[in-house]
Image (cartoon, rainbow, N blue to C red; front, top):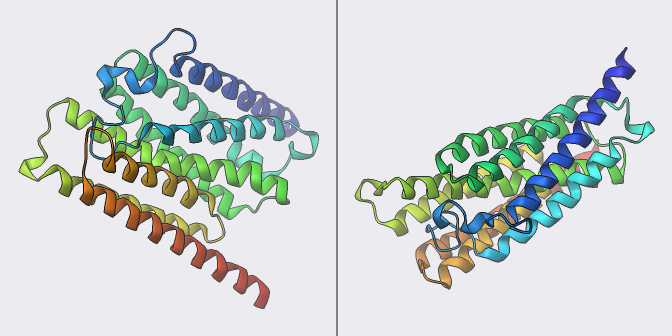
Length: 264
C-alpha cells in the first residue's frame, strides 16, 4: 500500500513539473502571450518600483526550472521511491510547481491582486520544504544538489520575487507609503530581505543555496537602481550591503557547521 502511495506521489510531482513548464513557456511570451515583465500593465517591469530587479535577474529561472525538472526525474528513480526525504517533501514540491504556474497565469490575466496571495502561499510552502531538507539530510552529493540545491535556490529567489510582487501591487493601487520617501521604503524592504537571508543561513547552516539566489536577486536590484529610468542610490547601496551580509553570514554558518561535524 505504501509503495502505491509512493508511485502516486512521484507521478504527481512529475505532472506538476510539466504543468509548471507549460506555465513558464506561456509566461515567457514564446507562445504568443505577454512576457511577465510586460503583463499587468508593466507592474513587474524592471523600472516599475524601487526594489524591482533589473531584467537580467530573471535568468535565474532557467536554472531553477532545470533543477525542478531534474528533481522530478530524480525522485522517479527506483532508489528514491521509498526515501523518507522524498516522501516528506514530494507533495510540497508539487504544490509549489502548481502555484508557480498559477502565479504566471494570474499575471497573464492581469490579476495583480490575485498574484499576491498566490506568491505568499508559494513562499510559505517553500519555507516548509526548506525545513524538511534541513531535518532530513540528503542521501549523497547528487541528492544534495538536485533536492537541497534546487529548493534552496527556489526559496531564495521567491523571497525577492515576493517582496517585488507585493510592492508592485501596492504601487498599482496607489499606495503612497504614508508619505515616507520612496528611497527610504527601498532601504527598509532591502533590510528586511537581508534579515530573512541571514535567518535562512542561520537555520540552514550548510544550506548555502538560498543565500546565493537571494543575493543574486538583491544584486540585480542594485543594478536596476543604478541604471535605467528609476534611480535610487540609497536602495542600491542597501542592496549591495545586504548581499555582502547574507553571503558572509551564510559562509560563516557553513564553516561553523563543518567544524562542528569534524569535532563531533
